Length: 304
Ligand SMILES: [Zn+2]
Image 1 (spheres, rainbow, N blue to C red):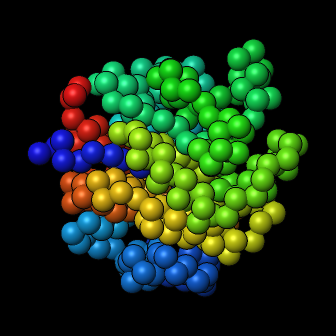
Image 2 (image 1 turned 135 degrees about the vertical axis):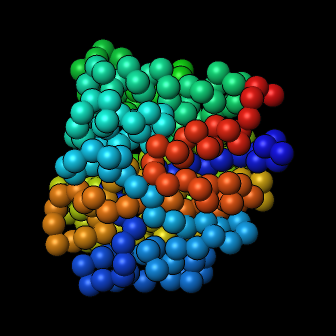
């Protein structure tokens, strides 16, 4: 029964494709102990598998539209199940415009979950300064920000972070501190993962977003690719070590980028769909980023 699937932790990782191991693929060129323990190898297409409780498969992010998949349309597609690039006629980069925002505000996974009476939360920590700018409209809103606002899910703050109840977009906090210009205590990626697992314990749906691989893939953030892999691996290890048995963890992306260090642009590579937990097998038929949200919502079930 769908009600067996109590909790979902949705880890959205911006800009990571699932391709073969190669010298150009940082995911296979960096030790990743937690991924190895889980999958028998790095986060590459060779580890595609569907076992009881663990699913890894490549899923399409191009959605039948020419050109390189981009964040605004890809994230909208992933978090709503609406084929946003097809509807708008192209892949749209960066922040969503009015048409995409409308789709997100009317159809996001967070809104649907809350309308069905399920408690959901967004785990990312925001600075007070950002939240003030959000209120006065002086900051461009990302897809997730639009989704969170429209679903009336409270934003977490640096005070939540200090209490161990939030995680910054860069997982460990140092880059978030630099970017925001405020002091943020460094958090080890394993501890960050444990925090996400703990948040997932008290909600039906917990969403976390990291755009670290995308920004490093573009060369916009000076962090070695190996460090990105270390953080992702640590985060996953922390989550899996602390997750309750009834929590299903879903890790996926909006488009490729980081998996090929020969270019600084996005790629048309498939993205990983990694699902760990009791609901994993239900995602085995998912073929594109459009189908993740509808599947998850179906498993959350109607109002309880
Ligand atoms: Zn990008």
